[in-house]
Length: 333
Image 1 (cartoon, rainbow, N blue to C red):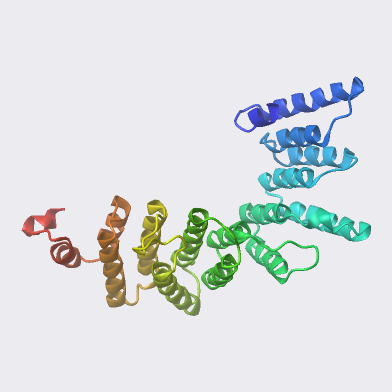
Image 2 (cartoon, rainbow, N blue to C red):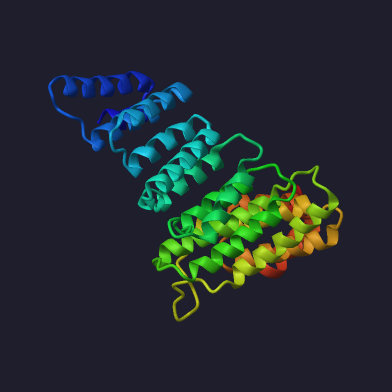
């Protein structure tokens, strides 16, 4: 209860102290705390918003355990992740892997949750090279070994999230590479269609985001590559053989995520195709028409469309595609 309460209150450190004091009282009464008790106290420290000091206190408790579990290690890793200490999280993983090798007990490292915790910390990190380290860890999992787990859909999504938010000029290329490997791996995993659809949709959106927010100071080469990947990814998303398709070919995908895809595509066209206004207008108008045809138009997409195309294109699109009779008063909008 104290661990859960420390997450959403201003005095989380005090609650963590209370949790640890309660465990100390148990020891004084001859009651040996279980790993579950230790994990709960470490969780309270991790959620206490006490920064690095709280994470260090959680680690001290970990070191005092006779037989810490994977949950114990990941709890401390998450505490350091919240304190923006991704390198410490990686150090703990390396320590655990070394321990597994020395003890010839590789079950310690065969949980994908452990590695996803590290990927999560890298995605949250303010380190400039954190996305690169995230990719390297994913590739290590993809290569596989006798004791490393294979990456799951969460692993790929975490790496894509790290890439979409970074400021690297080549992030669109790298995100597309991760997406392609993600889609290939999904064919081999037994995941229920609704969950799979949501994660694939979000993965496509991550690549569109990486393209749409390619740094303005990126070289011409990387901006051209981002534009190419933006168009290809949007096209591939719309033609993708979505799991769970019905006989009519339709899916029950999340409309909010699909609308975000159209928003990102329009944003990306505007950002990356400034030197090609004709191509930009054609792509944005085509996407807008498709969005309307699918019944996905919302205020955000409409605002983007109006912002990035000339007034006469807006008028003709409404008249030709939506069937509105637009008169001269539209110019006042």
